[in-house]
Image (cartoon, rainbow, N blue to C red; front, side, top):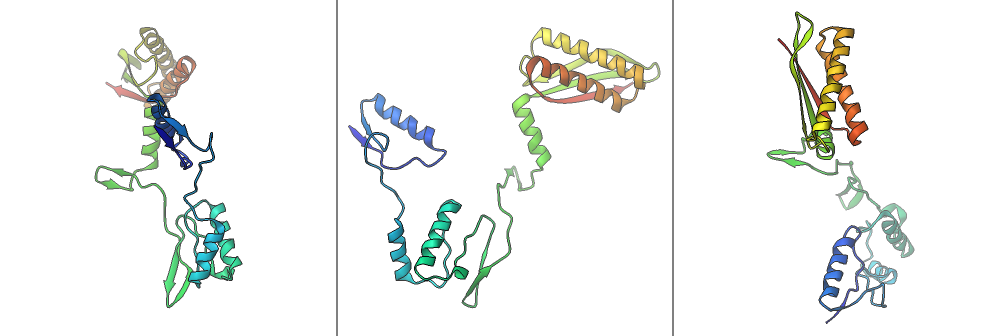
Length: 230
């Protein structure tokens, strides 16, 4: 079979189009596109055709649509060239609005635009901090440090527990052993310097583990230090 692809792939779809071409080639089809033949056909009207439409319709107001800003500007210039006043031509961006009232057209108020996040029954209420945390979790994982302290004797009790999920090498015994030693040293130093002050201990052990994981894995996972006093 012979397959002619006369269109140019929409930006962002190149990989999908290439997969189709390769699939057709594997089963023996001959492929012709703009890279090896003069077969390209635009899906858009030419400038002279657009001027003909403008001349026939004779709009009082004109708003070019569909395309990047450079295309909208070129379409607006065509409108000027056939006699539509510049004051009656509107180039709008996402969020801009036009008000049509009493046979007049003018710019209206700007409205909020952009991505609307939908999660469960919540629409558009996703906090940016939540999105940041999820991105961090997806990319680098999470590590939890659990430490128990005896506030009266000013010393740790029991073993330090470190749980890592989604961290490269987080299940390796050598890294876990090094992490325990690193956090234990930071804990001892924090108690010696600040006493049993939960916020200072949390910061010290978190910073120590973060530095170790960056040095060993080149990752910055979310680290949650949990300090419990007994």
